[in-house]
Image (tube, rainbow, N blue to C red; front, top):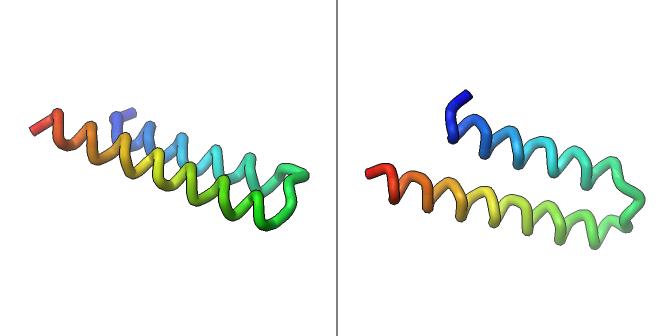
Length: 51
């Protein structure tokens, strides 16, 4: 598994956990956006350090 695949897997699994949680919809939306931001930041940092 590549680092990129691991980051994508993390994002996918975290979003699944959020959607399956008992949190209200507004909280779920906020959490999903936060996970996407974290994954994007990690991905861009990885790509920047790789080059």
